[in-house]
Structures are given as structure tokens and as C-alpha cells.
Length: 299
View 1 (cartoon, rainbow, N blue to C red):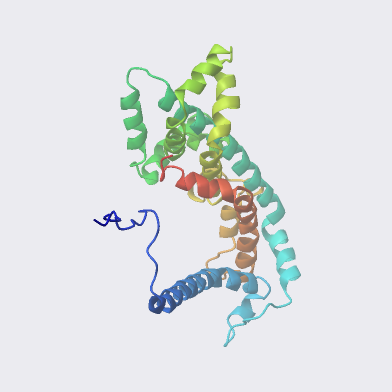
View 2 (view 1 turned 180 degrees about the vertical axis):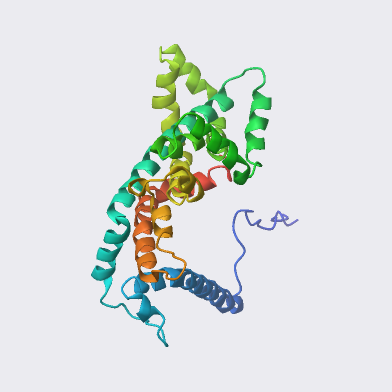
């Protein structure tokens, strides 16, 4: 009798091995990727067109901007526009005003939001859910509703035409509190207990142990807060009466008159006003992207 050879089971393909793409479909996929890249490049170009036009218009006079056809290349009036902008509104002074207000407001608001978010995430106390709901509810209140009562409060304490009236009322940012709370929720409680056992106080634990671990959320909050304060127009317009205390948006608004608008000055001032935002984003872009995506994926 001949020995029967054992039957071999068919080889199984591991589940993690991707299926081989047929050769005939590879050109189609490659063409699809190039099409997506082309569409992204066109979208980026379209989004840059207003910025490029602003940069070109800043180098021409207002009369040259209304020629037919309009100029598509830089002109030679950049220095003249810069001198006129400085003589008209004192652009260097208002730029420093905006920078100082935005930096102070961003630092205080980010710190306050981080502390409030940490308390709501890691402390157990009665009424915590109710307090969190109240923070969420404040996000649904329109900004215009707050203008009159806030103006009356600032007038009652004599803060009209002062920098603190621009900085202090909006330090408690509900968006920032919720953003930081989400960053603190996933922080391990065991590390907090270890720090407390080692004798670390609450403030030291917060600043040296917890806060460095939420740098992505903090970087995103810094960018959002700085941009919001830098571009703020209505509230500084109501609070500031002296021209030497104007911020950039308020000062640029004075270039718009009833009969004449200095478009070249507006374009140059707007161009210069975007530079601090670009520098800030370049410094915190990694934290900004990580902070936005931090709550999307669970580790």
C-alpha cells in the first residue's frame, strides 16, 4: 500500500497585507492623485490672489489703482505710501498699541483658560456639570448683546479711553476654556497623584507637570486668541477715544472718509498688519495643527 500524502491546506493571506492593485488600474490612480494635487494647487493660488493684489496695490497711488487696465506689477510708490501712512495715522505707534494689547490679552487669557479648563477637567466638586453647562451657554450669547452692559460697566469704573478696558472684559474665553479642558481630560490622574505624593504643590504640578503636556492645545489657543484680539474692531472703537491709543483696525478705519478713500494707504496698512499674524503662525504652526487634531484620534 502506498502511503497517502497529507493534504495541504491552502495558504492564507494575512489580513494586514493589502491586495495587489491590478496593473491596468495604476495609471488611473496615478492620474487621480495628480488631479487632486492640481486642484489643491489651484485652490491655494486662488486664496493667494487677494493677498498678492494687496501687496501690488500697496506700491501704487490710489489714482493708479483705478486705471484701465489696473496694474498687475509692483509700482514705485511704496515709500511714499509708507511716509503718508505714518504722517496720517502714526502707523508705527498704532502698530505698537495693537501689539502690546494683543500680547498682554493673549498671555492673560490663555493662562486663565488653561487654569479654568484644568479645574473643570481634574477637580471633583459639586456643581461641576452645571458650571460646564454655563460655560457652554455663554458661547450662544451674541457679542452685540454684551456691548451696552459692558460699556456701562467700563464707564462706571472710569475706564473709558484706557487700555485695560480693551484687555480685561474678554479674558474669560469660553472657547479657550473648553479647548483646554479637552486637553486636560486625557491627562493621567496617576501622574497627578505621583506629583502630590512627591510633595509638589498644586500650582507647581500645574505649571511643571500638566501644562507642558498640553502644548499643542495651548499653541492653538494662543493663535486663536491673538488673531481675535489683533483683528478686533468694534470694542476698541467704542472704548478708545484718543488717536494716540488707537489700534490698527481703528486707525485704518479713519482712512475711509465721506468723499475720499485712501485705498493705497489701506492696502499698505493691511499688508503690514498681516505680518505679525504670519510670524505667529509660523512659530506655532506645529502646535496649532496638533492642537486641532488632538481630540480627533484617541491613543
